Image (cartoon, rainbow, N blue to C red; front, side, top):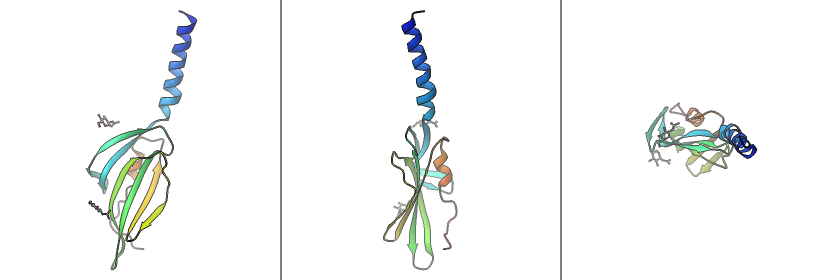
Length: 115
Ligand SMILES: *[C@@H]1O[C@H](CO)[C@@H](O)[C@H](O)[C@H]1NC(C)=O
Ligand SMILES: *[C@@H]1O[C@H](CO)[C@@H](O)[C@H](O)[C@H]1NC(C)=O
């Protein structure tokens, strides 16, 4: 076997092990509720960290504080764990990587926020 071919094979193996292994498959969903995707279900692959994003949408009710409305799942190259307020809407973001479909576990399960 030629040396060049051997080098190419080695490079290919390195590529598979070090580049491919870093990717994480994330769940994509437009409307995720209580552990189930109700619409827009798909997946995306990300190589960047932390690439899987979960965004929980809450709405403020006068009588009951913040109530979970729905959750959106996707990939993001610039995911930031934070709470954003847009008037009566609060978006609570979680980021994760390293485990396929890890973003589904951050979807809000409880219906009502007591605080
Ligand atoms: C990702 O979604 C595609 C279709 O959009 C599907 O064929 C594929 O099996 C999914 N991958 C995983 C790991 O679920
Ligand atoms: C609340 O969820 C519904 C889907 O269940 C969506 O159509 C609506 O835009 C959401 N409202 C807010 C403020 O996010």
